[in-house]
Amino acid sequence: MSLHSPEFIPVETAPVFAALGDKVRLSLLSRLQDGQPHSVVQLTAGTGLTRQGVRKHLGVLEGAGLVNRERVGRESLFTYQPAGIEDLRVHLERASMQWDDAVGRLKKLLEKE
Image (cartoon, rainbow, N blue to C red):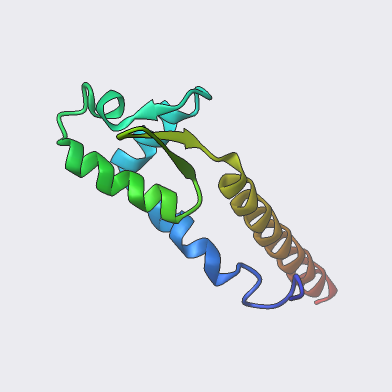
């Protein structure tokens, strides 16, 4: 896939964008960025949400590759996975480069006239 291709951001990044598009999920992700594993009970505390609601949001984050779930006995512990954000950052950087390139070409074209 070339930088100049209109499809330079792969379809597999869509779940990451969708996951980050919700303020509750952003808040959960922020809380998980301390590097410590957190249970659903810990993540529910102070949110005003039910554990079931938090689990649903964590499932979206997990599906997007932003958190990892580990079973410890009867409990699930969640940790932040920075690789999902890093992949997205790389794709957004490519998009930025493409726009910079397009603006540069337009500027050159306009300067010729």
